[in-house]
Length: 329
Image 1 (cartoon, rainbow, N blue to C red):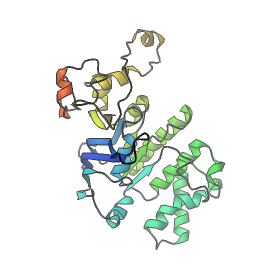
Image 2 (spheres, one colour):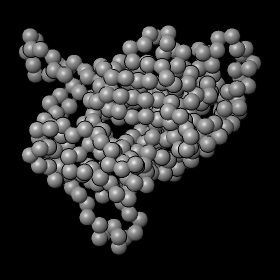
Image 3 (cartoon, one colour):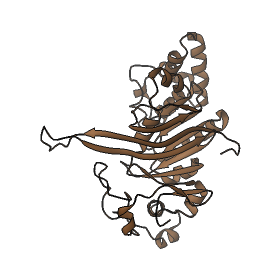
Image 4 (cartoon, rainbow, N blue to C red):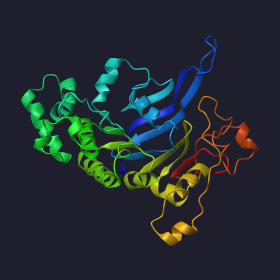
């Protein structure tokens, strides 16, 4: 992250709750509240990459969609370039969308099967720049396709004709065509082969450097996140467990959940791999409908004490590089 980079996005106490009905409930039973995201705070500076990790169901994708207003946040603050966007009108959100774009998890499902590649990539230009001529749109589409490694021959093809990696390149081109300031990448490589993952990650890094992009990179794979991120945010059951600079988090993780996640990363050295101690987490991920009292991680934490059940730990600064939500950190 550049030393003098200014904060572009600031999220404070963001909550996303859903009203759900139990499948076994009586018709007159009141709905329950599913707490998908509960009090998340983060910030992203210009040119920075913020990695977001956590196991399935912890609220990573819901957080991404709430930041973009694809899902309406229940409460909290979303400040983009000094403007408060929580509760903003559709017109105000429309004016911001050209600066904040998203790359989706399933590359094929995120593309319209009835549109050609050129139409898909050019659609944001037609939406946000209706006065732009068809010729200029075509020129910009060709230039962007070249940047992401697609050729002119791909222009008139349809999504089903391409591999997963090529479809993801189309999705990246579509997100970049408006020259945004921030891109939210929602597990963009999880559906791809390992060799293709490396290509897409390196492509994103190169594009970030050349275009000055900020990224929010959501992933399961901690090795991938380490490769691309400047800071890393660890989520569990809708809460932030730890937020730290990459080197500090991998060298000295301060939260028990982060330590458990890092211990599960395979080491490409047989001797070290056999010698390492994996911190097993017992039990299943609790339901976000009925989360544990106090610290939500306490039911699986090997170090939990009585205070963890009675008092919710707040995310607090431990040093200049690390914040953690743990009473024992």
